[in-house]
Image 1 (cartoon, rainbow, N blue to C red):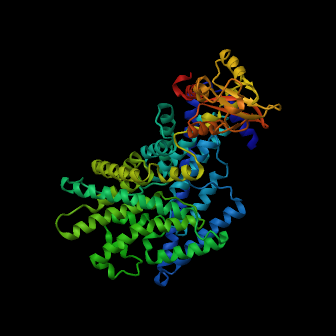
Image 2 (image 1 turned 90 degrees about the vertical axis):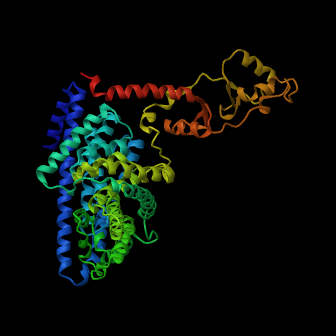
Image 3 (image 1 turned 180 degrees about the vertical axis):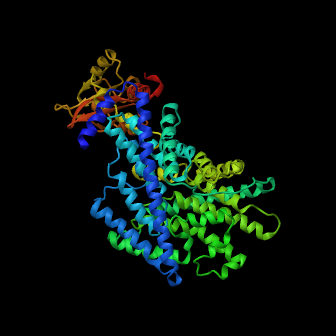
Length: 596
């Protein structure tokens, strides 16, 4: 039955002459299922959190909070190990790797594995977010849709980004932010051929979310902002930039793993129990923390006293300010422990949480002085944008996301100011966001290099096989004759088995061999002037590796060997020319408006 349906769909695909329409059909399809996945995940996790809170309310000191996160992380690790067989690819960083290195191919099991593991982790109180898992799920839906229809790498990348956009849009009911997220974080470029499918997928995801899961994630009631608050928004922007650096460093460090010498199950239980103790002290760190975030957006700061062991002490303003400050610094630690112990989640929600409480801290402390009154709700909303902008290095996503999910478009100016300042400060400390920072320093993958487009070229098509080979015993006087009859500026020095012994760079030895006072005489041999090349390219290496060598060594020609035998030279200028041709070809194929 399934094979019959698959055959009919592919047959219908072959009858579609319009590539433009087909890619849009696919983006709607991807957006629909990414929206369904987001709705299922939101419903499941929020239901599990409510059940956990109800159980906790009937136990003394909410002792259940100590054990629930450990249970969730343990079940997550068990699923990954025993059922998924460690095939799940966690985090947005892995999506970027697949785009850059794997032709935008993502394993099929990522469509459902993230939904299961993240619901177990966060539903039982793991202090992380659902955004990274839903982005990974949407990306997997888009990638596998592209693979099913045998689309090009560029089109698969567009559908991958479309799935991610739809996931973010459906989770937050924010279509514009969903599109901007993919453009700023995943693609790094804005073009009409890319923009239209993302819009369609994002809009479809939001429609599905609204039909099946009504209600806005956050609601902000505000009459606008006052000019006298402007200096404090600038202060909030400065704090947001510094806290963004803190989040990136601490979160990145802890997410790499804790208790690494222990086996995965011991790590899950120990990390989960430690996390549970932290949550028992700071109940607001349970799960995503959106319950408390909505409360402070409403101006209800007394909600922080709920379930707290220090409820009576929090009536004192100084203690409350210290408590809020602790939440700011502890949320990313709790999130890092959750993920580092083996749970599945992201730092998106923890970043929003941290930014919100940073805004609350600024407004609360200023209001306690009695000198001026600041809108707590406004500062909470703007603080979220500041933290997101600094951590993600995506100010547009941060501005529009917070504006859309809070309905706070009247706060556009403060959002722009705080997001911009935070972004500038974060860039001063790290030129790349936390996802790219790890890829650059640990996997040598750079955002400005299009590995897929480079690897679409074949190394064989770049090799200049019309080379001039000489022996190291060739005399300089004979080399003169070769120079006069050739335009080459590099010569391969080979032995009798055609194995490379060295090269002669004409640019390097021109003055040496023609200088009358040089030590090199016409009776000297090539062995006196040849050099070992700075690198040798293997015939099996991808073209991207060759480009990395050219950039690293700052040379324009390198030798190529196949099974230890020299086969020719590759020129950087030839590589760049072929890359340009491939770039033009792929973008013409992907241009929705260039096809009938």
